[in-house]
Length: 139
Ligand SMILES: [Zn+2]
Picture 1 (cartoon, protein in one colour):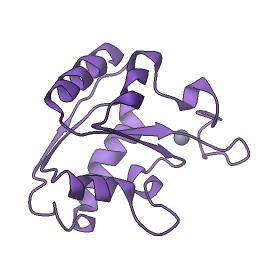
Picture 2 (picture 1 turned 135 degrees about the vertical axis):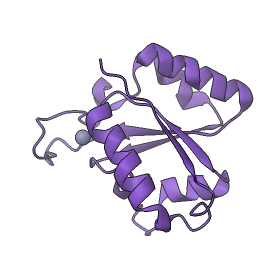
Picture 3 (picture 1 turned 90 degrees about the vertical axis):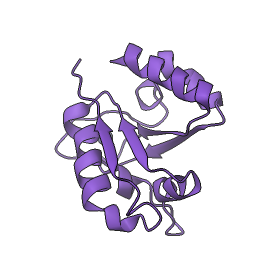
Picture 4 (picture 1 turned 30 degrees about the vertical axis):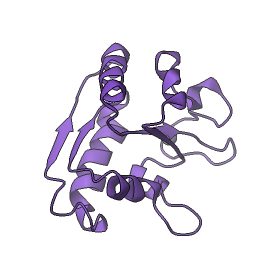
């Protein structure tokens, strides 16, 4: 799955297509129930895997640390803005290809709950975001 994500990311970067990457990142004293401690901020587990770390320097890639399973909620800033919604609007996104490692939790949750159910949260794309490609692979 990582190799395929790298391949897709290189294609997107060559074409200068926008990439949005969620990085699960948790404060060590704030567990995410019911899951065991994972992706503790400041550790390698909270960073992109080494094969994708080059994305940190790509101008078309937006990286967002999130501290909850829900990518949409995890994109809300203290001022009430939403980094993901802003990314959708500013890039005029109308199709989304979703890939990820933890496909049965974060990826499915993001596709089904955030993009489909919260579609009305995306004023610009509510009529245009009509295709969602879900890439399901298990490690
Ligand atoms: Zn988490």
